[in-house]
Image (spheres, rainbow, N blue to C red):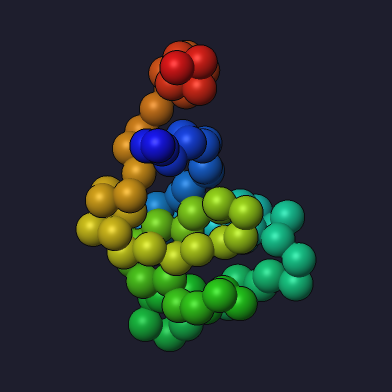
Length: 88
């Protein structure tokens, strides 16, 4: 038998060096997570260092992905597209 991976919706924010507060609020629901600014403009989270241009993805847990990794794994979908894909 053949199987395909189920499509699931994730939330993500790209760090641009200016949106520290947005990242902080984004990961606030994650147990024991924190956001510390580093002297070089990067952010330190419990799960690692977020460099400018990286994505923070909530997919059950917070994941830090480079822009290339994010683009390879995810694509933007509106709510209607998500519902249509789930129906198939």
